[in-house]
Image (spheres, rainbow, N blue to C red):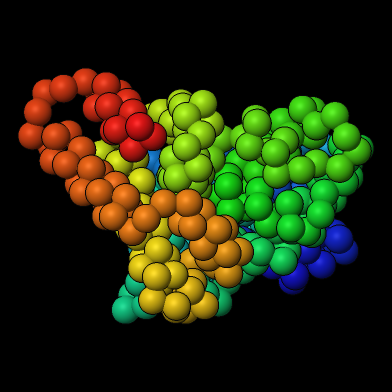
Length: 321
């Protein structure tokens, strides 16, 4: 990605790029940079070789370069197109770019095919991977600063844990938290108040509210989880998994092995410490019962025609009773 960034900064892009990877926000950012100062010609995945060739070799308006953009065009299912690249690209006007964007379909290069070597030789392949937590934390800090707010590294990490690592989602959540926060520095409480958690993070928050006996808080978190429009069975599964982790945490605590819990349960040290504090409130028998209740709810969802929300509400009422 650094090579791409430098090429764009120097205004000397390659003639052909393939963009793919799970971080769509970053990918679309670089697509927008390639579009700047170029006449954009978008072709759909069903375009033929003649249509592609015509779009590539005709000059732009005046001295303007062109960007021919194909989204979800599978090069490895179109040997004819891939084999035509050696003839096509030399005729491309200077500064113009042929861009293949893999969005709804996955980029799966078939190294057995002759076309693979052609594509690898002529195209610059850029994978937009999930960003590291450190890179995301720095980016989150810059986004908040642009909105007139500050955020600690701990709170930025909480935002990632709570809302997920997708930059498009985080950008939206940052804007909401910055608008909501009254103080100059955004807190985890601001993020919880307006943020939409991932299923996993929401299940963690829900389990924490339940163990603290916080009925209003549990109801709010459940409502947010329902907003995700995930199947009820997925939500129960996530909550059940969190309850099993809490059961393990309590078991470790009763056997004087609390320091080993995080590694055993596969959670971060921060989450491990929070869970350890949470489980001190109830006996081991309560967590065993909670795990059984979640299992019973799962069976009920799979075997009856009951309203899913009603089943989830019944489980919540049972656990906070």
